[in-house]
Image 1 (cartoon, one colour):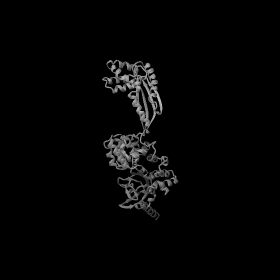
Image 2: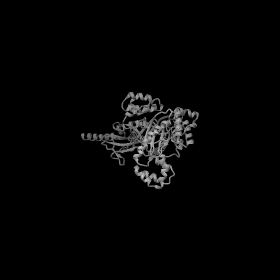
Image 3: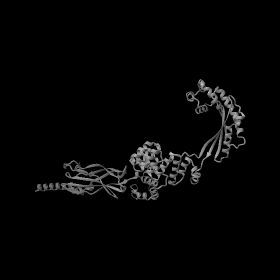
Image 4: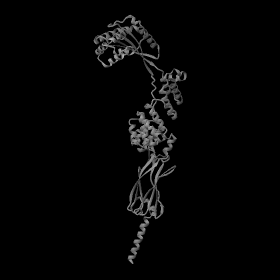
Length: 544
C-alpha cells in the first residue's frame, strides 16, 4: 500500500512539474523573468533608436516543448512601432530557433527602430506569445526602458555662411608727388626746376589737399637719389648732398602754406628700383634683357658692368633713363576720409548713384530689410558687374530661405571656397546631406569645417564634431561638447535666446542643478515649440 502511495505521489509531482512548465504557467510566472536595457534611457542617434536588451529566464521556467515569440515594441503618443519578433524554443523543440534550456539562461538581442516624431516621449516593451502543443498564450508585456533622448536634434541646421568682404575703406591712403631733377654729379637745385611743371602740379595738389575737409596731410617724404652709374661710394655721398639741397628746395616750394605732419628727409645712393621701372615702361628694344640682368645680379657694381657691356643699349640708357634718376621727390602722404556709415545711409535715399562698387557693397550691409539689401546688390552687380555683389546677394537669399534664388545667384561665379560653402549650406537646408558634405569638403575652410561638424552631429559622430569645433565658441560648439559629456561650454553660453537657454537647462539637468534647470526652462519657454518639447523631454523627467 505504501509503494502505491509513493508511486501516485511521484506521478502527481511529475504532472505538477509539467503543469508548471506549460505555456500558461510561463505566462503566470513571467514576473520572474528579468529584463535589462543598454542604454537604460533610450536615445535617438542619427535618426534611429538602437539598444541592447538582455532577458534572463530563471531555472525551470522555459518549457522544454514551448516556443516563445518575443516582439519589441516602441509605444509613443502617436502610436506604436513593432520590430520583427525574435523566437526562442525549449530543449525538446525540433526547430531552428535559439534554445533556452530549462536550467535557465540570459539571451541578449539588439533592437533597432527608425525615429518617428513623438518618440521623444515613449517606452520600449517586450510582448510575448508562448506556444505549447498548438496552444498559444499571450504573455504579460515587459517594460524595458523609457525614452527617447533627442538632444542632438537641438543642433542648429541653418549652416554658417559668410559675406565676402566689401573692400570698403573708411580711410583711403593717397599721395601727391612732385620732383626736381639734378645735373650729373651735381647737388645744386636749379631755379628752373623749382618753376617746372612737376613742382607746380605738386603745389596745386597741396592746395587742394589743405582745402579739402575730407583730406588730411599726415606727413611728407623728401627723398633724394643718385642714378646707378658711377662708383657706389661717390653716389652715396652725392645722394646725401642732394637730400640736403632738396630739403631747402621743399621749404621754398611750400612756403606760405599751412603744412601739417612731419617732413621725413632721406637719400638712396643708387636708384635701381626707379631704373627698373623706367626701363620696363620704355620702348627700348632690349629692355627684357636689361631687366633679366637686374634679376640675375644683386651686386650694384656687377649690374652696372653688365649693362655697360651692352654698348648698343647703354647710350640710350644714358640719354633717356639715367637723367630721370638724378632727382629728389616730394611725396605728400594723405588720408582721405571716405563716407561714414551715416552718410552712406543718407546717400542711399538721396543720391545712390554717387556710390562706387565698394560703397554699394557696404551700403547693403547697413540697411536692415533683406529686400532692400537685394536691390542694392542688384545695382552693384548691374552697374559694376560685381561678382562680390552677386555672391552676397545669394547669401541674403539663403537667410531668407529662398534657396532656389540663392543657387541662381551663385550660378556662373568662381567656384572658390566661399562658393562651395554656400552651395553646401543650400544643400544642408534642403536636407541633401550627402551633397552638403561634398561641398563643405571642397570648401575646406574654417566656416565649412564648422558646417561639417553639424553633419557629424546629425550622423551621431559626436567626438568628430567636438574635434572640428574645438576652440570655437557658440551654440553648436557647446552642443557638441555636451554630447561628449563636457557640460561647461553649454552652461556658459551667454546668448539670451530661448535655444541657448534650453541647452543650458539640459546641461544643468545632467549636473543635477535643479535651480538652473528651472531658471533656464522659464527662459526657453518664451518659445512655444521649446516649451512643448520641455514638457516631454526625458532630459527633465526627474524635474517634473
